[in-house]
Length: 106
Figure 1 (cartoon, one colour):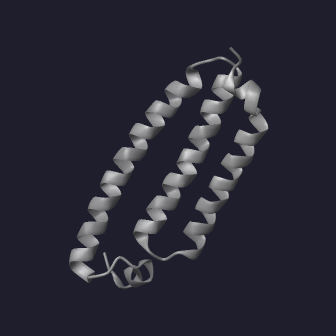
Figure 2 (cartoon, rainbow, N blue to C red):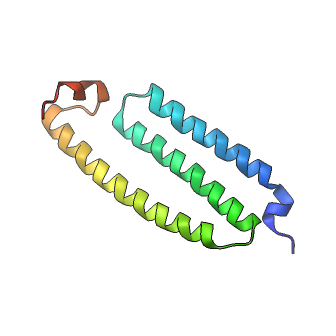
Figure 3 (cartoon, one colour):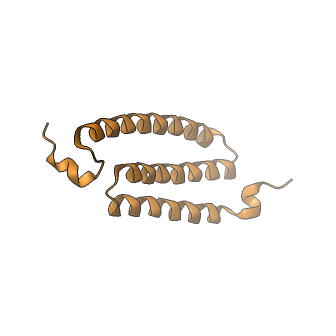
């Protein structure tokens, strides 16, 4: 049985990863909602993870897939902490708009 990378081709994975990463970057640049920005960061991380898995499968080495596992664990912790911060900000301000965070003083 042939490898999936050999059937589809690694270039398609690279193109899909580039498209997903660009969607994430444009989402961060043009959106002011913090939750949407977190989702765009997750899209960018998942596009990088997809490339790691594709190249790991292409080279028949499991190190990239193990690295993806740890990256996903760190991303989950980042989202949990980020959402906790957003809940705290929403309780204080009443909005999660990034432009309104400029008024906070520390």
